[in-house]
Every structure is written in C-alpha cells, then in structure tokens.
Length: 196
Image (cartoon, rainbow, N blue to C red; front, top):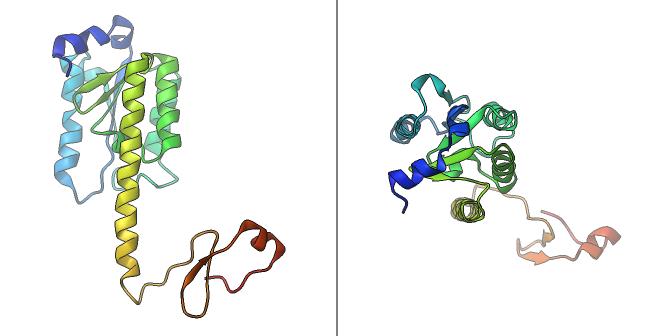
C-alpha cells in the first residue's frame, strides 16, 4: 500500500492544472454508498486540487451500470479525451463502468491524456504498466463478481415455476423441458426441434 507521500509523487503539476472529476453512480436506495462516493472529492483536495476544480458527475444516479444510456459516463469520457481531466475518481471500478468495453474505453482515454484514476483511496497512473495491470485486474474481478450475482439471480428465478425464461443461444428444449445443446450447423441448416 502506498503512503500519502508516494501518492502525491504520482500527482504532477500538469495533473493539478486540469480539473478533477468525481463520477457517482449508485442505486437510489443505497444512501450510505452514495455518501461515501461524494466524500471522495475530499481526496482530490488532499492531493492538491481546489474545491472549484472538482466536478461531480452524478447524472447517472439510480441507473444500472448495464444501462445503454449513461450520459454522465459519456460526459466523463469526453472530458478525459479532451484533456480537461487531471484525475477521475470513483468509489470502485464497478461504479465507473459495468463492463469490459466501457472500462477499457475510459482506461485508454486516461492513458492517452495522462489522466490519473483514483479508486477509493488508491491513485493509479494508467501510463505506468504496473498500475494499468492492477486496474485491469480490478475490472476483471468486478466483472466476475457481476457475473456471479447474475448467475445467483437467474438461478433463483429458475427455481420459481411461474417465471418463464428463454433458452440461451445454442440450446433448445424438447417437450419435457429438458435442454439440449444444438450445433450451429443444425441452426443454419434448419434441422432442429422446437426452440424455447
């Protein structure tokens, strides 16, 4: 774990000349997490940004990270790409993005514009290979966690008889509701039984 002094060594004058962007995204019912996210702005102050330089982007509050329209996230990435951001802050990777492509879009934009990323209390410089590796691992772990949550939710739904679901790709159901794998060739040739 780096000390505050070591973190300050990552913050250079060219970072402090630009603004700090705090991205807040949380479902409305979790007020404690939202409060913790808003408090991250004080980390930027501790590292040298003024209160006037901190922009809170909370336009996506109450929206799922899987939502296709996240105006706040799009704004954040555009500000980074335009070189206006010295640091991007979020409570955790899953707050900044919910999928691999969004995360790497933001990560690459930060690297190209030499923008730092603060997650919780850790500062990362995506131009440094070790920091980039750690950020990649954090996203992989976050995505695996989301996968596990979806799997548990879907498993619970399947246990409820009144919930109907469609078959995943390459699977079909026979009359006994038993799933059978079908090959792509069978799909293309039209030689398959009933679909879910």
